[in-house]
Length: 233
Image (cartoon, rainbow, N blue to C red; front, side, top):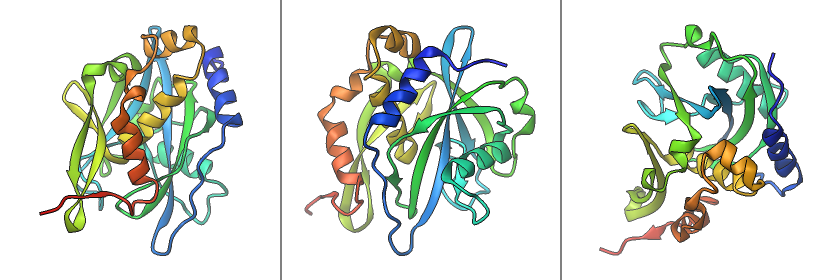
């Protein structure tokens, strides 16, 4: 059994003391939660993502964190994230680090990201839910932190609206949308850690994407999902 690394203990402290954005659920929207799973292999810090199949009802073939809709039997959103992660990819032994800001999606979900440390990830590949999950992507934080792997792109929305959305590219696996926004939120929190922890987790001194003015602009857009830029025809 692996104990939680010291740097993740510091991240836990940061998440506990910060004011977290908690969103109410508008009419017609639903609660959901995802697990943002850390693990360490050969001294390299990794996040686990999933590639969804084309059999799911929403976000077909997209990359996401394991997670799903809040169930009436779930006592908390943390329990939702853990249950879904177990059902989708077999993750079971998790130390909870904390929660990131809630996000709102165009598919009408209020999503709570729950950061967790996987204590034993040896065998979870054998338990993938094939109807929902095509395959697992283990992504080093070092690669996600590289400036050349990050960009902001315009994505059309309804009625002529556009959003400026963060994109991450890891070996031609494109992480964007709600998952990209959660990843930005996580990297911004890691940037607040001491230098030695940033270098250990990210492999660099800091994630430079946090200095991108378009990131701040994007977050101003998506917090309510009612204030995107309108492209005039």
